Amino acid sequence: MTDVEAAARRFVADVWNVGREESAYELVAPDCPGLGGTGPAAVLAWHRDRRASFPDLRYKTVEVVAAGTRVAVRWRAAGTQAGQFGPVSPTGRVVSYSGATFLRFDDDGRIVDVWSVNELFQVLQQLGVEMLPPLTPGEA
Image (cartoon, rainbow, N blue to C red; front, side, top):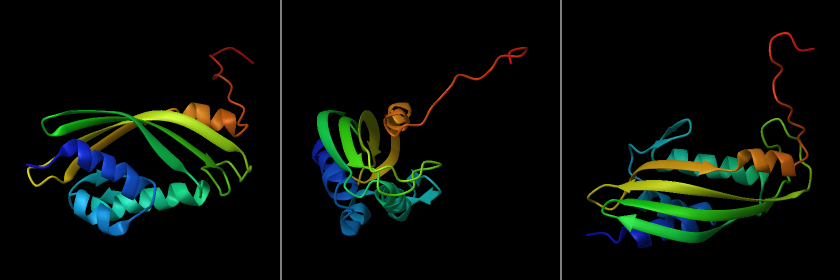
């Protein structure tokens, strides 16, 4: 039986922080859904894209809770925006934000599902994006 807590910690350290491709292929199942694709390649592509925006981005594991085949990871991240981030041109600003990622492992100890929530609104504010609430009908 795989130690899913250790595997989750390795996922953050090796894949998120270092982009170690061999770890992604060991830890992520081929059919694991990702942004724009499936499997390790999609996971690595997402992190390459995020690193293009924040080359020094680092994640710190704050807390890990594991039960059966499921793991919850609470984390903090920080990095300097040196590349395009969505519609935001490079600012050189440092952002710091928190999030939680929920992983589900198969019987072989590979990740078959990843779901994350994070403070994207806070990241945009730190980058200087002005966000106004939408107008309601009749307002000008």
